[in-house]
Length: 274
Image (cartoon, rainbow, N blue to C red; front, side, top):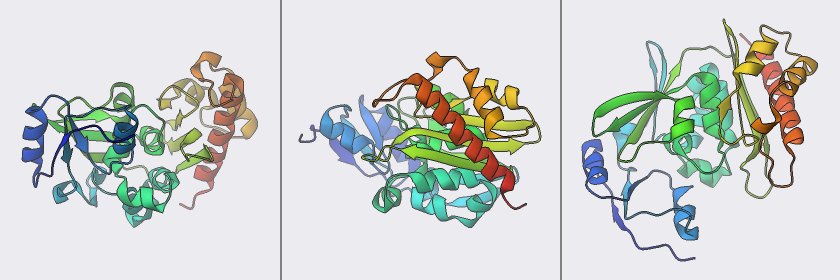
């Protein structure tokens, strides 16, 4: 299909971008465009105005902070996947970024855009939930924050821009595993974990209606051992309706697959060098 009619503007500052979004009903943020543009082409998405953020250098870059790592929302997935600081201290995020699509997708797609994507499972939100990421948002009311888990449930409010991902300090004990659809490379199921002093944080996507943290599984496996048998038993105790069948897969199969991927991720996290 041909793209529907819309206006396009490329602001040079965040304040200008927010003014444009507030002043036009139906205005949408354009970051990498890897989800939005195909949606506009198929008619799944609508926009009266695209506000392109690619000139906003203030939204790029990765830096250490007193509490962890700050990742600018316009940082590309390729940059996120290769950054030494992220690789060392948030490996689940680096692995999720690396799992996205192909090199062309990763060179255009952005951390903020992937985190904010709705309507189809993507890789970064599940890793962000496991890592305890907080998203920084800028909007008409100023700057606010929301957890990655809350963002996955509610989406980004209209007229608001994701400006950064705030990653708490957590060391190397994190990992990501994925089974991808062969045609699209979207996750059939993906699992991410981070092992903390209070026990593991576990999240899944693809097999569920949205990216979810599985607190019940966390409680059942506790401090370990993180054997495949123990992890699968914890997943079998989850309600079957949690897992949404699709693409020829049953809820039972997806629940089992989520458990297998989680067990692999936990093993990888435990074996990571200190």
